[in-house]
Image (cartoon, rainbow, N blue to C red; front, top):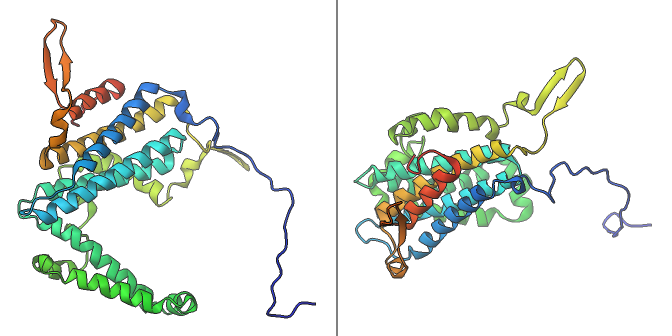
Length: 313
């Protein structure tokens, strides 16, 4: 017989019902079109090459550049995640990821439209503000503090982390925006997200894409999961989307937005000096003449060929 405080390692075995409905060995992306997938990968990797060159920042606009470079990194991670989800036919989580990409673009546009750099400072400080608040909320919630933090011996750690973010928020660089942020609300100061998108010149994107993707982020559109309901008989939608036309449509929307976002940052931060050593990209006309174009413009036209539309939209 075992005592109350003794443990014993046991081995469990038995049949587990399983059904691979996600077609993992044959992802939706294999159904093409191959050119669309190739140019989307090229765009993300070109953005990563640009990010890799951003190792110095302007002394005059230090906070702005730090925030913009961070947003570029986040956009590339988000864009690659979006591609990966669509490659596997996971359209629904891809919609939520696309929404995040639009959030990032909205932030970039608000920051670039503010010559005072207050927007950049607000976003930079908001990170410290919300992390401080998160730690305080953990400590002030009795159930979380007693049942989780105390049992794990993590209360001193959480207290110190919350204090460290509070100290960062007190940095003099945030003096002009700290009191306003402490009032609460969104980091950008607008009354709601729609107003922020409008100020960023993205009102149509908000209504056409961002707002509808919210249904998938919060899972409030349960009717979408059914293709038919007749009495007591239901037909569920497939777990993956395998129609290449549908996948290509969404991939194109995401990649064109990502191209526009990266283009904004290239225009602001400048083309890397190291790239001047590369052979130029050229556009060749039927009469044999050539015009030099930058790599981002070249990829933009490749996107236009693969998906249609304008690379600047």
